[in-house]
Length: 189
Image (cartoon, rainbow, N blue to C red):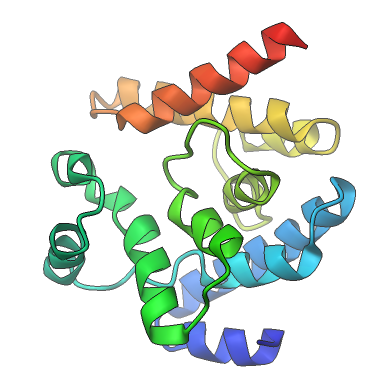
């Protein structure tokens, strides 16, 4: 699938603001893929489709989580997490993408997971630092991403956890597990 075809498919699913965000994630993901020797084409496609399900009705996403036996913990945590695993499912079913690396990069771009692949890390970080993002801490993560993808990812997850804690919102366990996995691996290096 080429870029224009993918963008045309995803544009139908998004608001104009979210489409502009998607373009920023795509460009950032390609840059990170080139910097860290990942496949830029896979990064491009995963980035284009990362928010494919973002605006699906919550009832539809809930049904997919239940019917497809996705992680049941999703239902007791923030609904903002749902669009990632549901998106991976819908991109496979509706778009016909079957590349597991791309689907997993979509699936884990909100929560992360232990033992993230290079492509998964790229999409997570690209989503966090794309040029349209403006919030405390994003510049530090942008700078880290130029030096170490893992350091950028750790800082992005750290910032997210602290943000949620300050708002007294529950934190998806997989996000803690991801943070711990990354930090433990750095200790070994």
